[in-house]
Image 1 (cartoon, rainbow, N blue to C red):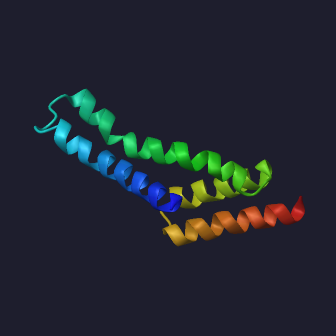
Image 2 (cartoon, one colour):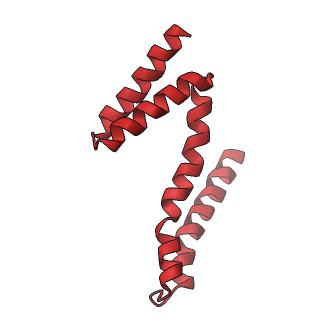
Length: 99
């Protein structure tokens, strides 16, 4: 029964997060500062959630750093996401074999 309560609470929170901006901001935001601030929020939140997970994912900070560097380099050159992911995982794997 508790799982149903957990799912209901998660559904309610998710709904509120998506519904509140529509109810609070009925007109277009005219402030350039606020618009530029809100533009970068998704990237900031994604980075804040992703980077700690990256460095704890392998159990070794050196292999995680090697994989992160490989991902950043391949992404900088505009390679597809699958190439970036495979390069990062492969680099972390090879680094782990030598440590």
